[in-house]
Structures are given as C-alpha cells and as structure tokens.
Length: 346
Ligand code: SAM
Image (cartoon, rainbow, N blue to C red; front, side, top):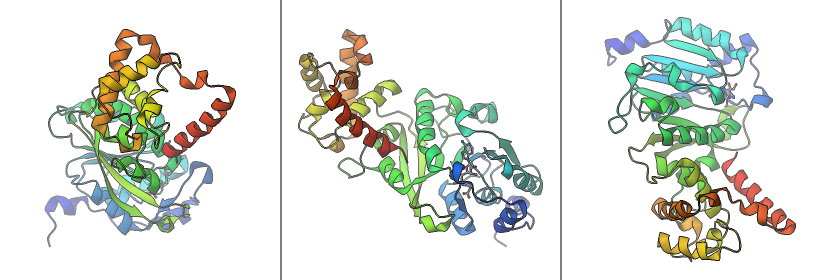
C-alpha cells in the first residue's frame, strides 16, 4: 500500500532463488578468484541500503557473481544498474536478471582493474565537483585481493578527478576484510592507524557502516567483512600530488611507533641530516610525536615541508632509503616493508 507507482514498476517478477541459480548453472565458488557469495538477501539488502538513496541513480556494481547484491539493487529505484564481472560463468544468470528487469540491468564481462568507468556513464550525469555528487554510485563485494589495490587506484583517480570522477564526486560502498575496513576509518592513535587510513581520509569522508561475520558467506572466509562508504571530499585535506602524499605516508608509517624524527630520517640520504632538521622545522610538528598519532593535518604539514625541500632539490624525490641500507639493514627493513605491505593488503 505504501509503495509509490514508480517503486511498483521496478519490482522484479518472481525469479529462482540465488541458491537455485547457483545449482542450475553449476556456479561453485572458485578459490582462484576468491569467490565468497552472500546468499542472505537480508544482508545484501542492508549493503544496498547503506549506499544511501539510489533513486534515479546509475549504479555500477563490481563483481556481481550470482547476483546477491544485484537483486536488491534492481528492487531499488535506481534507473540503471551496470554490473562488471570477470568470471564469464555468471553471465547467463545475470542475463536472466537483465531480461526480468526489462534491461534496467546491463551485464559486462570484464576486469574492473582495467575498466574505464567513465565510458560507462553518460556525460549528462556530470555535476560540478563542488556541488552535490552526481546520481551515480559504485558498489561491490569484491575479493579481498582486489578491493585494496582497487581502492588505491580509485583514490588516485579521485585525487586527479579522472576516470569516473571526471563526472563529479561519485560515492562508493565497498566491502573489505574487517581489519582493512578498520584501518580505512582509523582515527589518530588507534591501533589500526596506518598509511591506508591517511590515504583514504585525506580524499574522502569514510564511514564503516557495519560488519558481516565471515560465516554469512558461502564458502565462509576465515575473517569478517566490513562495509565502508566513501564520499570524495570537495577539498582534499592535503593539496599535494597523490604520489607525494603516498611517498610521505610510506616513509612516515615505515616505523609507526617510533618518533617521527626517525621516520623523517628515511626521506633523505644519510649524509643529509640537515634536510631532516629542515623538514621537521618547516612542518612545525613535534619530532617526538609518533606517526600513528599524527592527524591528517599533521601529515599535510609534512607533505608541504617535503615539497618545499623538493623545490630546492627535486632529484631527492627519487631517493629510496632502501637502496642505501646495508644488506643486514636491508633485510630488517625488508621485513618491515613487507609487514607494511601486509597492513594495506588483505
Ligand atoms: N557480489 C557477489 C556476492 O556478494 O555474493 C559475489 C562476491 S565474490 C566475493 C566476488 C566476485 O567478484 C566474484 O563473482 C568474482 O568473480 C568477481 N571478481 C573477482 N575479480 C574481479 C575483477 N577483477 N573484476 C570484476 N569482477 C571480479
């Protein structure tokens, strides 16, 4: 009774359940593609709800698999749903959904890591960066091994307003391994604070919407999952090129619990201690602060200070402290770097 005419028009006709689709098409989860399916429609509806109001939107879903999230998307008031799936086995069942939805769904066989998103969105959707986001949303429950490199790639695009973000501040709702989701939203001093926290938070407003226990997936992964909502900020909190921010963070979080002065010493060759002093002075940050305690504003100051020094000696940007370390140091540092990569990986 409470449904609007528009909502009634968008309801799907009766369809086989996702479990039946999996059985009929023999869609067993492939370990190689880290496939873990969500079959509980209450949870997939909750993911879609956490994306916010989708009325009139174009929604791009990455990794639809058998369509657990796609179905509630089709039952929303989104105008169009475009799904991008790497595993061709899912295309026939997605085609059933496309037909049932009277082609509101478009299924694309492709790899999201090499898909040019802007070519999928009509330019009429574009809004000014400093106005409301366009009526476009990106959503996905991707394998953990894809979601972290993808968000880094997309943060880069957000920073340069390229790819989908050439059309405005398109929001995203994505799942991550729970610990990675905690890192993405971690405030200063949190045990989860790391370079991924800063890379996400300087460009986007981020919110951990809710968690899903691993046992809710088929097959269940060993870890729980967090659903994170991202809205690109009108004004990034750091106004320096992405590569600079990335490098400054990489160095600072190399030793997250040591004094910042120690981390700053990794920016320059050993014999250039003068530059470490300069960088601390220019930033105005207490060198006894520890990197995990730094706010994005503190890191902004370090980035600005580093760029000031680079203006005098641009070649220093190429300096890689790992190449100067002795083999023993290299081994130790290698372990640290590996643990850093692990922090942001899944
Ligand atoms: N969305 C479905 C769900 O929630 O049940 C499936 C989730 S499963 C974790 C991830 C899906 O992403 C799989 O269908 C997998 O084939 C697909 N996938 C993996 N890598 C991909 C990529 N690079 N591009 C597009 N899809 C990908």
